[in-house]
Image (cartoon, rainbow, N blue to C red; front, side, top):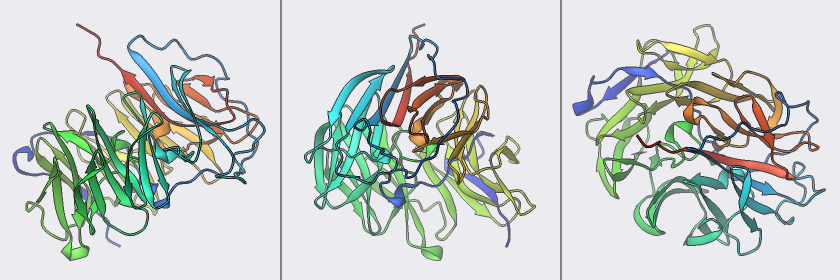
Length: 403
């Protein structure tokens, strides 16, 4: 099999303007598996660093996280009564619960962690029920639409909410504003989702030059074509030849950034672009030339650099590169400045359970030992969350300090 090397095509005015900068790996979305809860469990050891108190959160930093609480005594990890046991969905700010939502037939949320999304301190949720999809914020239903779909993009704009969703079965996608259809494609695959770190908390939807944007492809193989959408208006990207193998496609300053493969150099999978950073970062899983592979990034010279050997969710900040991996036995490891590499027998439920704002790793992990509580780890400090359940997502907001 021929190996390949990434070529980053900076189309039109952006061509060759900026050097590549180191990035980190992000992996394929798990959303196509549908909603899930982790099963099983086994006793684990003490938490490295020990349960305790996190360092005082800086005045310009706010930590938000969502959690699911079950009745005491119920073994949610065995999950034998899924759907019939009541639960509460909680929103915390700086470890203080600010929202408690009881489950119920009319609720706009489910316990599945990949259906919980934090944006600017608000908890957005999605639920499929009776042939419809419900979207809510802070426990209040915002709108619903026919069909069973899951969100791959979610962007709030004042009182408006933009969503990009895909059917639970079948192909295509639908772009909506406040539940009203702006664009629908029966044969189309968006680039990005809500479980890919390089796309951030808003997933496949993002802002570029004040417009709400996303990119998608249609067709297969030699017939594949590529499109960009800006404020609901689609345009075909004729700059990109039909049929090329594209790993990632984004807009920046109105121009497409395309990550494609050519037939030489290192093999790579799951390549991603990080256009939010100064310059550009490119990440992926690279073949090492000896039959193995590693998670890494392209440095300024275009050479792949190793972050870790395992498949991992990797996060890029201006202060460093961080990786979180989970092996088949359910052991979590992480790599990066201030993080250490201690293995922990825990659930890392979604990529939204990690944030590296300000170059400090924040991790929400749930021990497989049911005698222990879920916890949030900041650097080497740990603070438990006193619930029978799990933390499903977190968000760290750092405000800009006044001059």
